[in-house]
Image 1 (cartoon, one colour):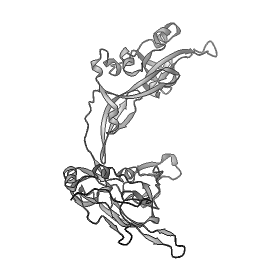
Image 2 (cartoon, rainbow, N blue to C red):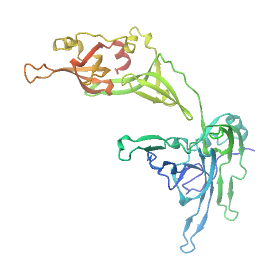
Image 3 (tube, one colour):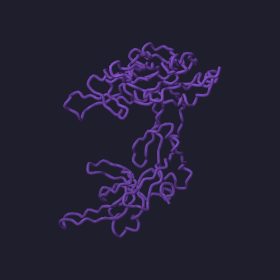
Image 4 (tube, rainbow, N blue to C red):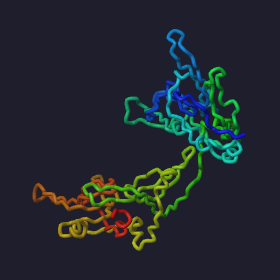
Length: 402
């Protein structure tokens, strides 16, 4: 028997099957889930998914006005009891956190159970509330007065497990109607999925039927990356004060892979800023591998054995402006505390500061766009430059806009 997955719904209803809700004690709202939770954070209730709805058509006996008497069966996973829990709530007891995400329903709406079984058996699924539960952060400090020394951690009391599909069933009584007026009085998902997951309490596998509307498919595929290669992400970086010069790509080097509950995070180091950046399956499409070693001078761009330790003050002086102004350099620079950093800079001009007296040495600065500071103008004291090199021509070919 062919069936579709869509249910009929009331046009005016706000909370449909599949909506993520919470009871009124939860600090999240539909417009703000960026809330830090403190005190006894374990009083924070779960985020739940509506899996059934009873339509209550009651009217006030005094005013004659229609009353919202709908009730909702809500599903969540408790990591404390290691089980899926179901509870009924009146509409006045819950609030919407996120509207129903029906991607799995939309993509399978015209398929029969037989087809669904062929396509879903063995696939990995997880509750649609998982990302919101992963975002819950608790915050505390050893001394309440030391706000600056607060600590944070994830609040994972209701984090759902990743499970595999082992059965698919059709629900015969998924929708009921009033026999007198034909209005919907009860609705739930037409398809239930039996999943198997590793129970976090018993360390054995458990099984449970879950409505399809409460789940999302998880595609687990680890993507390999070359630890020796350089990757590029196309991204325009404007250079402060230089309207005609822009960086068109960022060089990246693969660092490691992190497994976060149900997906991979790929970490790359930005070779301009030396900061680590997280990439996910979708954002990986933005980067591509380039084989620096294939260029004639390619290995000199990022695989530099050492910079040149020359007579720095003698090089960066007025007589040599033609050799360094409007050119790209890599420098090794020491701050006032003696800490070293490597920076790729675009030198705009040389500045000689006037000294207060003849006995005080003039400060010589180079005004530059610094890629460590995302193209912002910085002034570097020549006396603190420990080494330098001119960037090879391939640097401009690869990273600068025409």
